[in-house]
Length: 145
Image 1: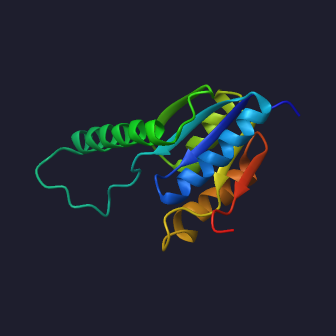
Image 2: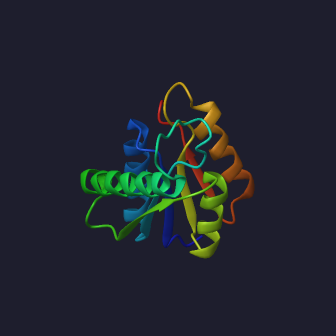
């Protein structure tokens, strides 16, 4: 199997750094590029947003995610590996799968756990959905092992 393009979903938790380091190791071994993605918020129903339209709220969330992604990439990306970063909007598992198909990714490297405390509810279930529906192999990493 030739691996030229690796997709790395993150959530900015401490685990994200570990996952990216593992993906960078693989990318160096394979001569692959890395695309790092994070999800902007998808469901605003639980938020109280006073006096601003939902579109403005969404724009601010995406802008914040883009700024945080820029910092995350600066702090954690190895400049010797070609890479890009993107903020996804919508259902995170669905968007990861769509991006993997559209960009013809060869491998997805993602964590089995995200933020501690909501791991199974959010990221664990995302990893499970991606593994089941991915158009390419998925390497899941348990950051606690």
